[in-house]
Image (cartoon, rainbow, N blue to C red; front, top):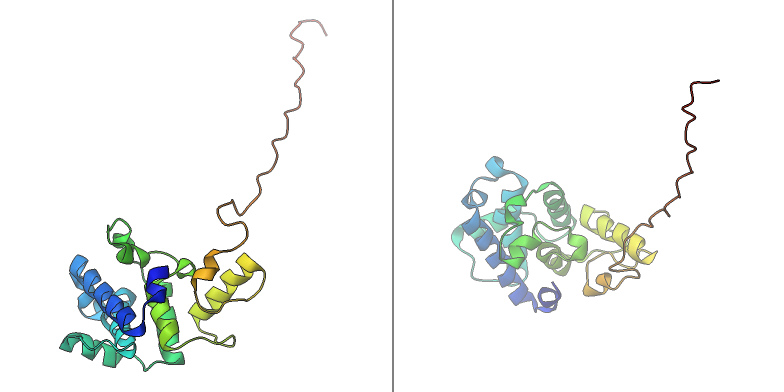
Length: 188
């Protein structure tokens, strides 16, 4: 994710359209009508091409360009649409894929996501942004750092105190009370 984060806009746009194409190759239904596959198809067929186009990618096919035009222009409406798609999409078949970008679609974006990196580049959030992505990143920032230090993912979000440790403390084992042997004699 750090490598994607550091790419110039046009190269990030190419990475996003390549991600959409790879997803369609693995699961051809994603390239079809979004009413059939819902949020997953909408994200792959329309949102990723819109982000790629806004980042300066010029090599879109006619179908990708039409999908990009169907998504809102960069701004709060696009942020809302991306948040809705990410919140509701289920890319479970990509969990076992060898392509790390396709696997990234299955992870929570608080640890980095090509989609939200592109979104934040095209229409950066402010601390007043109220879309699902910015709210979620601020919530994770509060949990990791104690403050709303971040509204958009960046590699520094991974350098939080306690990284790699359990986020909960185990209760100490309580020694069992000694049990007295029951008197088995027949006399009272």
